[in-house]
Length: 135
Image (cartoon, rainbow, N blue to C red):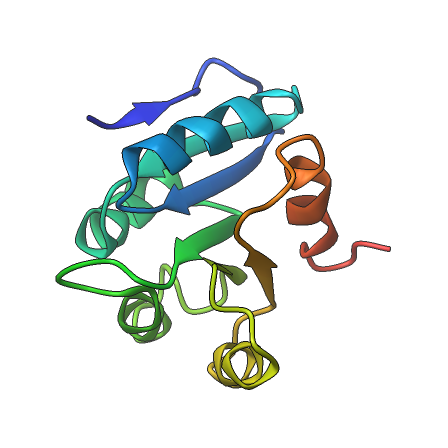
């Protein structure tokens, strides 16, 4: 089921989180809700993310790397081919954080990688740190 917190101000940082694992999406939902200036949409697949980008217009996208049907890197490639997703910063979220894997993901054009497991208490700050112009 799609869920969004669209009641927040239009000035909120819009975060699109894509992960096929329901439990991880729930943890991220709670973690991001700690920042009252974040409005987030949580989706279970790359395909649903590609559809949602048009209306949600995220400021940043967090993509799980390993998902069935369309993995994170494939979703990222599709986003980059579209006008509505070409310049949106993308951060991969993955348990595979060996240096070589991180370098590969960054070489695709991602602005960063967040390691799973992550600290839910600092996740919102991590996301904000990847935004263009962040200190």
